[in-house]
Image 1 (cartoon, rainbow, N blue to C red):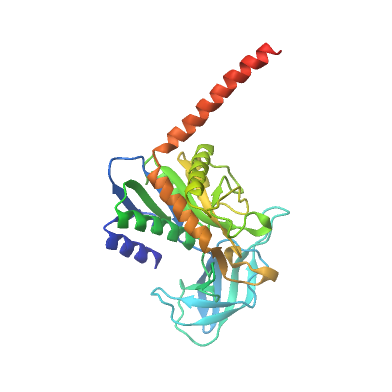
Image 2: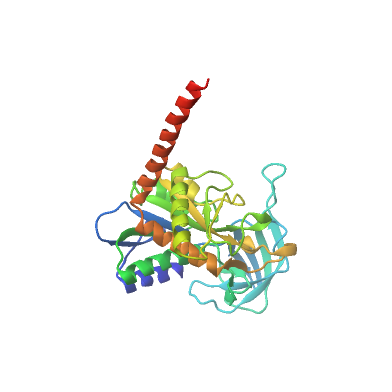
Length: 351
């Protein structure tokens, strides 16, 4: 469904669309003089169940993605077949299966479940079983949806491409939409290892990331993400993105941004960075990460619309100012070289 939408989006705007052999999708915009390519990347998938067995109204389900083991039992799911929209069947989870921790101290994770259909339906192995929560609702400035992670990132990339195409702005932006992020960053790793994007590209992974534990503030603006739970991304990219955010703040009253580690989970920036690309990341503060609501109950995820609009502004600024990346970094080096030489003379003189 997401891939079909992306292809139609590109066709309507005269943009290039392609898929690689891994199933990742690319929507490309290029206008004006040659510029260093910029890649804005987001993943299409979200944790959910796949039907692995059907016996009358009883279903066996396998969970794909990360969710704590205390979630699931008694929750309701909707069944989606190969052809969207779904065929209306619902089921309730009667039991769940959880993983054994690889080592002491690690949490148990949901890996599967058994469910009972509320009525006889034509359910097949390979169908999806997704949480029966709000598919998408707007409450004031809050978006409540079954999947903000990472359709909010996909929306950010598409909104940026849409504005570039509508106004015929100069720039070179590749929107990369990956598969299988939730099971180990697989689509991103495959694309990076196969060099599916230009080797000189600047890559920015666009995500949502859990704001739990005070990690970030919803409504506090988009987050320039310096790293995740496993890795720190390119300091040069972070410096450049912060510089652009400061420029936006000086031009747009009310624009806010945050600079955070966001170490509750991993992101595809790790794969691109470790496989040799100059990589940064930005994200939105996410409520109910992976649908994990309070008190062990499944709930819709949430993001803030002001944060989303601010992230689009930041993405637009990156496209317009991609040529300033190296100047920003080299300018900082020159400043510190001057400071260092002056400090060295004073230290020697006052020894």
